[in-house]
Image (cartoon, rainbow, N blue to C red; front, top):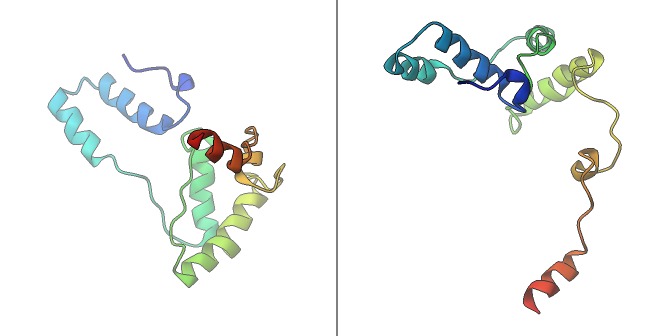
Length: 124
């Protein structure tokens, strides 16, 4: 009943967890309890230890999204910007070469129409 992992564009790790639970023959009640206990993976340590853990999951194909938190705290921001990100780039886990100057261009999305024309067309 679960889709093949290769057909999922995101949250592949979550699909694998529930596939394993289904194979174990859990009841609906047991599955709900397990699902509540399945939170987001988090890790702490030095930049090198963090990247070791990230790389292990990335190379195994079970980490497809990386959410970084801590911006706003100067010490954590320094750890992320000057420790973690350079090491992720060095190991080719995070891209370093971008094709454009903005997020839309880097995702290779079409440009937006002139915003004045959009506003004008809605009010006309």
